[in-house]
Image 1: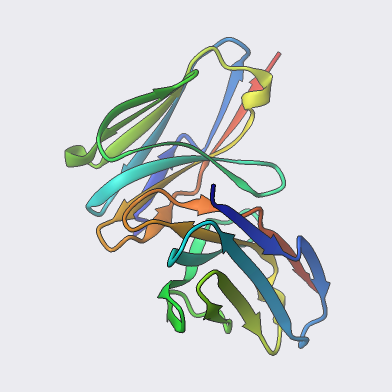
Image 2: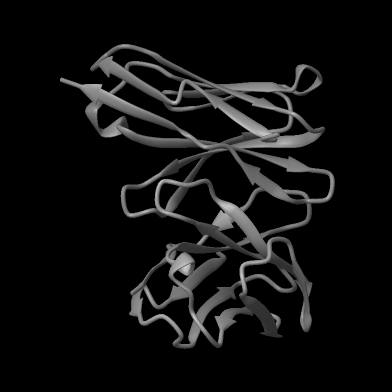
Length: 108
Length: 111
């Protein structure tokens, strides 16, 4: 089965609303790393933490390793936040495994 | 600061032709290096990883090969392209058990 599962697959918001993206993983992960994938395909690293909560700007990443889940919260969404958000887990072998992503659309 | 450079940016190649994609890391000695591939609409998959010069491990078999001829260089290649090789190729590096940093990628279309 898929090792990293993201939900929802897609999300449509009005500008200013908050977004909550979920990530569940099946193996023992040492950390979760969240990426934004640009339309051209390149990745921007957003946040990474082995456990607990981390903030940067309007983004908050929470990882609960024991429960094999994590989340990315985007507050006050903006049109420019639209795109694909990828969750990836690192195992103790160092391998990074990606989920299928959440496609976020923010409308004016 | 470390920089990661991939080349070419994009390629259109014929089925059966050879391919060579490159990746160079600057500012970091002995990095762990990785190749990832994403089919259109698909999930990013790790293809190869290398922890030292001359040593490459295959993760997924896609009729591709990889080599690490220098500490800062990682090459992905094949002698005969298939239609299924189309997609987006990303090179990445990481310190041991830490965050990954990705290059800008190469988009490949095989026709």
